[in-house]
Length: 212
Image (tube, rainbow, N blue to C red; front, side, top):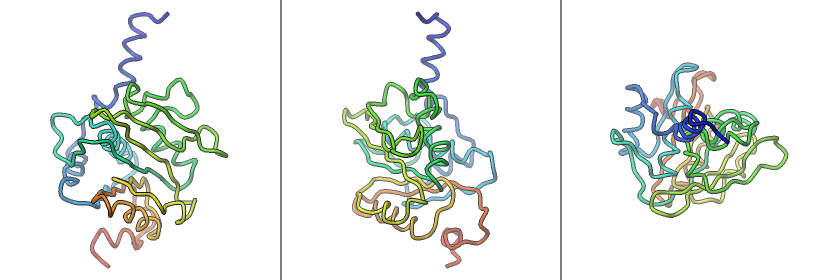
């Protein structure tokens, strides 16, 4: 039986989204989503880029927007993908921040998606502790869907779905980016990318900086 302090900690750990307080650059990034379909948050290591992305995706999946929110809102369940360079990097980055520590299933529900909002999940075959998708309760009463992807799956694995949003954590190849963007065309959805520029002036960076 949990003590009162343990129960309070458990509840707090399962409501991390309510404690998210963005600094100025993160808040501006969120706000730009109200007017731009494509966004980039580019900054140095350990400056909260992935944390920022996870918070926004969790808000869209749940419909739980804070009072200070100035970005885009959905009043219905949404379909999102989130991914990074490899399945392992996706697991240890976006999955960990959205769902909780991958290697400890009892901690799933302690990420940015509130524990009480997680309806179900399915595992990815062949990659230990990785999830393929998560079903999330939306405040409207429906169910949002989050799928986890990786760039090393190749372009074909980024085809075929109609989505409201795609989150690229770390820079991706241009063909992967364009496939993700295409997935949002029918819905008028959005893409967002969070990364540290390690590849120099790549075509993706140049596109966002208006040099193409």
